[in-house]
Image (tube, rainbow, N blue to C red):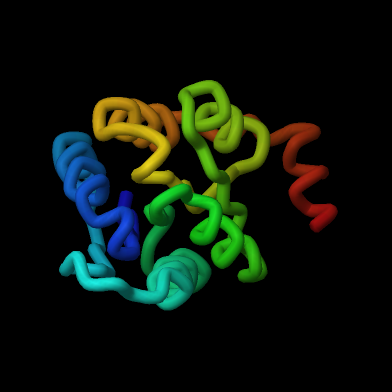
Amino acid sequence: MKVAVGCDHGGLLLKESVLAVLGQMGHEVEDVGTFAADSVDYPAFGQTVCNKVRSGECQRGILICGTGIGMSMVANRFPGIRAALCHELFTARLSREHNDANVLCLGARVIGPGLAEEIVRVWLSTEFAGGRHQRRIEMF
């Protein structure tokens, strides 16, 4: 699977852990930045990742900022994007199983690299259940 990954300056260090686990899992990664600790505007990186998912160039996206809140707010403005802010494993699994989330948002100042890696593993390995959940997704 091809996964687009983006972050702002607050998510830069956690992005390195996420990129490592994606590589271990055998996923193709498109890292859209940021690549330095200088302050940047997170909406630009959120938009780039979401556009790659919307176009089909990437099947999923992962966005990281300090809390994950800003990135999730940006991502959910795009039609066809179902972004989930996850800080633990239960919501990571259900965001895929029930909501077919195609963008995962993480907060680097909220969770550490170990938990982030577990969340990414669960989120990427959980399939959408379909059924009644598909009907609900089609409503928005």
